[in-house]
Length: 453
Ligand SMILES: Cc1ncc(COP(=O)(O)O)c(C=O)c1O
Image 1 (tube, rainbow, N blue to C red):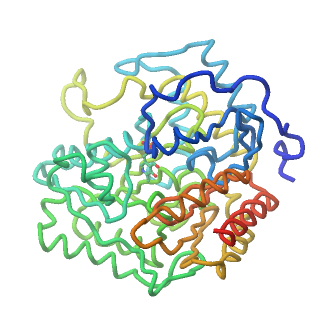
Image 2: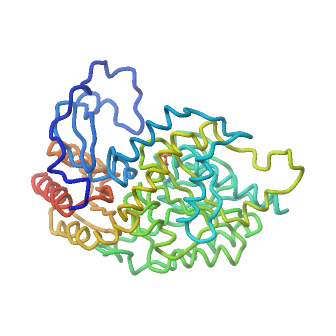
Image 3: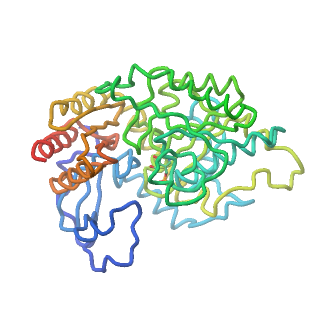
């Protein structure tokens, strides 16, 4: 049993508090089917290690690390203590033309575990902000080195890069774009890599599809490389249902970017901090981007935080001109927030002490075996996995896409397991402290629900 998170030792009832005393009316909820939710709310009141508890004290296994972020599990003592101590010592420090020591200490520690060469760290408060920061950095970098015409940004179909205007513009999800009018101009998209015909039920990266990276050559031929600033992709697309890069795809994308002087951005908001069994997907696939966005696991989800890692060569291009002038006019009031830095430092210590940045690799065979055991169940059309990420794709109900999986999500919650669904895909991404017994519980609950659906 992994130390400190013996589920038997965790209380099975919630302590007092957490019960709902307010009306549900005022809170306009994010990414939520609000009317459905408010007619039958699903509330969480407490969390520890691998579990949540509802206000009534019902225990729920967290099979999704909250929202792909609580990689070390919930309420880990070191992180809790660090946040409390920091709040008492210094609650806030202005980040513009001022700083506090922990922001430098953390940047050094982050750079030490980052893929080689990505040794500058710019802080944000979320993945969405990290993405928009990276896109701005890419465009400004080209301008600073005299190629101001390189403004075009290339995303990928079915990509998710958060919800700010830059992120939805390079993102490839119609539902997140269609209501919001004009996107950032000069954006194009690569084809996505999901090919059920050729790659269904792959274990690990799929064999077919490396040539889809050549789609970048089509876009270069259309717009000319001299107009393109950057390409942004998730190494493993999470939010649109765990789409894995075909074998050789990321290497090929890197080579095409190099050939044309285009920056490659990896959005590692979900793959960063151990999800695949290596500190980052870039480390895992041995492909180094020029810029890398992270969030979520950087602070174990405890205090909002994100960051952009940049190559020194990119950073250094900005460091010219009069010394009193701001070189990169960008940043947030809460960039390098002291609470977030304290939480992240304690998170990195917890990861290191417990070997969590590589533990997904050790658990991956058992996890793979378990998720693929669902293959013969009704309406399962694909299963895919890598590290501690798994997806079970289901046949949609004709005319009601997403409903089948959403009903399964609700039923799993009733039966004590929190899963996540996107469209008709069930996605699993448990905290990296997960044990085989938790995996068995999650998979057997999903199996029972699939059988009875
Ligand atoms: C790949 C990726 N990029 C960006 C984001 C946005 O992060 P946030 O919700 O912290 O803004 C997410 C969130 O899930 C993500 O998965």
